[in-house]
Structure formats: C-alpha cells, structure tokens
Length: 163
Image 1 (cartoon, rainbow, N blue to C red):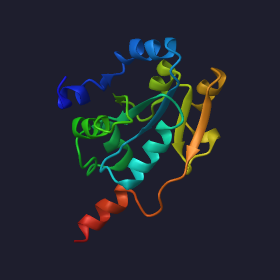
Image 2: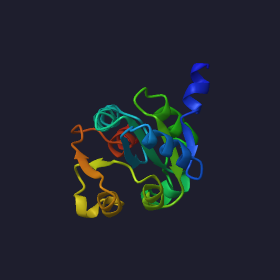
Image 3: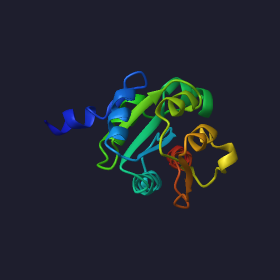
C-alpha cells in the first residue's frame, strides 16, 4: 500500500467507523477518543495527541466538519478545509482513525464508539466534557491532558493577521 493510500485508509465517516471499532475491541485493543477542530496543526496538537495515544492502543479523532467550525469559531474559520485537516491528522503515525462529524459536539459519535478512554484538554473538567457520562457508564475512563503553554490555532491565526 502506498503512503498516501495508507493515510487515506484512516479516514472514516461516522456511519462507517462502527465495524472497525468493534474489530479493535474484539481484539482487546483499548480505544482512545478525542475531538477538536485542529485547524492549523502545531506543537500543542502534536504533544496533546501523542499523550492521548499513550492511553490506549488505538487513537480515534473526531474532527469538526467545516460548517460546525464556522458555527463554533466564526465565519473566517476554519483556515484549512475538513479534508485537509483530516488528512494531516491521519498522517500522524499514532493516529488510527479520523472521523469528521457535522454536529457542534461529538455526542453522537462518542455514543456510537463508546471508547475505553475519552480525552480532552485540561481546560475541561469531567462534568463539562461531552460524552463523559456515557463513557463512564460503559466502564470507560475520562482523562484530561495539559496543553503546551502559548500554542493555539487562534493565537497563530492572530499572529499571521498582525504580520
């Protein structure tokens, strides 16, 4: 399999991810899930996702679709299209699947996947993490990971505007 073909094989639609998740779980693979916009990939994202991947065997990223990002971040976002963002994330060796979702939150996707570990940034608390209740009720864990200080897509975009 060629490199680009391999990367593209990690891209899923929410309606297609179920069998893959079931296979991983049947093989006793611990599934980790996180989500976000990941508009301009930077060291904060790389660090966060690497740490998330260490919490299990398979890392699944729920990626906000373009329309979802516009609703959440404003009309001038995203900078990169959902296809570009998905492909960049899938290119990371420790990412096993990227699933684009249209809703403003990954609630439906988390309910479908029911990961063993749900991960968000440490700016969240367990009581305000979407899907935490379902994951905990299913026997899973909810973890938070500290961000790398001074790195965010929003700050990078602002820096580029000021140049």
